[in-house]
Length: 298
Image 1 (cartoon, rainbow, N blue to C red):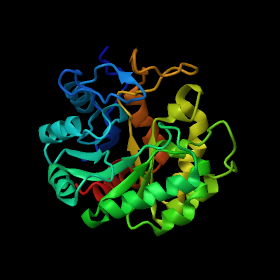
Image 2 (image 1 turned 180 degrees about the vertical axis):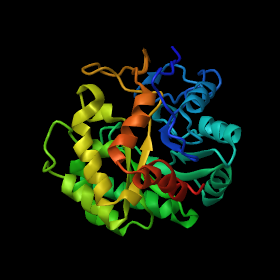
Image 3 (image 1 turned 120 degrees about the vertical axis):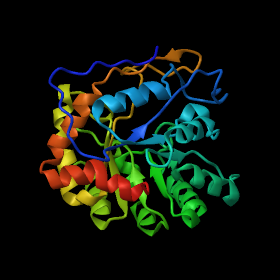
């Protein structure tokens, strides 16, 4: 089932030019872009047109598509989106392996790709040593293009490979708050390491998908962490919706044989919430506009 939305009566656009949603996905009909045989889940349909309509209603001008895992290393759906958006609106983060040549990556760059994903959490890879080796190899592969590496992993893994992260030849972008636990204190293991990496300027954090770290209404317990990360370095924070919110209900095991519906989320509330957490107008503009323009080369 394709996600839908309704504009809240009290929603007011922020009036900022160049707001960027830095973490989205699309899932056109499978007959258009088939899924990989080996995948963790099979998503419902979420079209490019539906995402564009949502952004138009929200006042979001720019978008980054993080190529989703059900397609494996076939980036065709991402390239299709980038062609539709053009260079003023869209950027992509690809999924690759060691077989991708520099010539192929250069073609991706011309299409609008500016980074690659290493999706450790989704695939259950939690060993810091092997994760560090994978990050290093991937960073070295894309460094000649001036790209970044994006990783979805948890605080324990981040802390365990922080020395490697500091030595990477590329910036590192950490998805979804570093998968911290909003229900635990700011002193939880690994959060200090993430803040230190952010403060150093080596790491960007996506303040995206707070439902992945919080179970409270409005994700109020995520706010202290968002503020701590912003205070560590407001020039290294970016925002994303994670639309169309591919995440199974708590306790439900993913089964690729079953079509998985998306999580219902209020993306309008997500935009106003991050502006509130960022605080003053200068910081809001950094988080929603300026940092993304720098990172994704808009």
